[in-house]
Every structure is written in C-alpha cells, then in structure tokens.
Length: 119
Image (cartoon, rainbow, N blue to C red; front, side, top):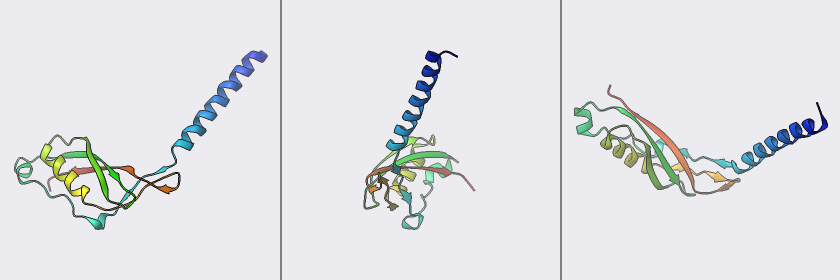
C-alpha cells in the first residue's frame, strides 16, 4: 500500500469518526415519557365500532417543559379518520414527563402508536 493510499484510508476513517461524534453531540435529546395514569384510554367511536374499523395510528406530540401537550399531529393514519381523531384527542389530554435537550428541560416531540382492535 502506498503512502497516499494509507493517508486516504486514514483520512476516510477519521472523517467517519468525526461525523459519528458530531451526530452523537447533536442527538443529546431526551424524549418525553407518557404518564399513563394522567389520562383515560381513547374511547372507540360508535360509528367505527359498528363498521368494525381497526388499525394503528402513529401520532406526534410536542410536549412543553410543564409536561402538557403544546401541539399534536397524526404522523401515520390508521385508515380511519374517526379513530385517528379519537386517539389524538385522548392522548392530547395526557401529562408527560418533559423531555430535555442537552440536559435542560425543553419542548420535545414524543411519538406514540395506538392500536385500535376489536375484542
């Protein structure tokens, strides 16, 4: 292996390590954690129940430093607007243990998937 080839390989390796370190430094974020005792389970909408609708809704919640939901959105629909709306509404009322950025409390997004199934 020539000196230039070794330098090129070492340079590539150092670049990869630096990129990994930079990504880790930027990822110093702690996600909020849902307090399941703080809210009720979503209630099955009557029409969705009659139509035997099921599915999983993926939601995002922006949680403030006080643990309350500041904003919310459906990230992946269950396929039923009424199921999505019911889940989003119920979880928006929940309290969370706030998230943090760089060790300091901050508004951070939390993700929750809720599965609607008939039993």
